[in-house]
Length: 74
Figure (cartoon, one colour):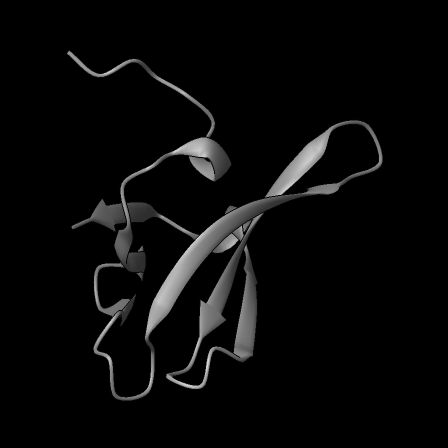
């Protein structure tokens, strides 16, 4: 059984983020090569963000986790 840990510490690669029933962002290796969770300091506690990378390993988008409905792993 897997232990629960912070999403930023999760060793499994993120495959997709879902924003609702009809909206998602998926790793496709053509435009999005990876999605990684990380923490930034918030006013009272750390806030989870997602960095979205292109195939050149450049961050093309950052998404605050409050907008994410679900996270899918590989």
